Length: 143
Image (cartoon, rainbow, N blue to C red; front, side):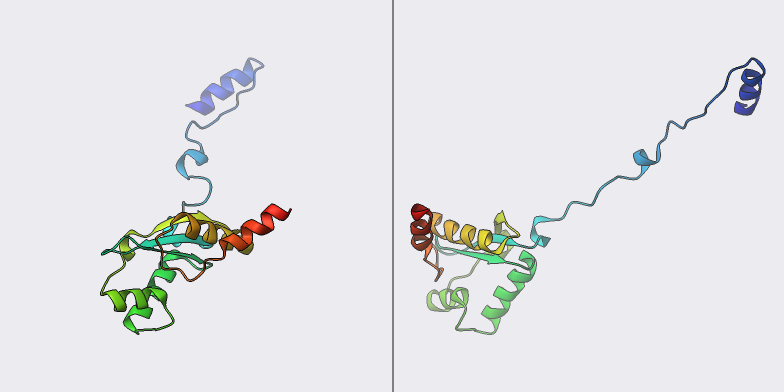
């Protein structure tokens, strides 16, 4: 039918151009799929205790999911180097690994470490060993 219309218009001295209403872009979504925040890399995160009001603030280059598995493994292996394991074993507490939260995403290592220290300072009830935020504050004040 469309060829007949085009032929008729050509005979009358007009040109016909066909276009499709269903564009390819309407069928296929452009861009990348959204990444679940727990699969993102370069995060600063918080894990809360189920039994008390303390939190653990950490930062990871790898995904939060991989970091969570590492923390759970340190508890299962009874790793004395892990502050999470020590808190759990000394107080018979558990951490809520299912409800951890991402506080920040920073690719730059210094920015991520600063964000971690800032959040350790903001969440004052934590079990973190790193408490050197005051050092960074003095550096900022000098500049």
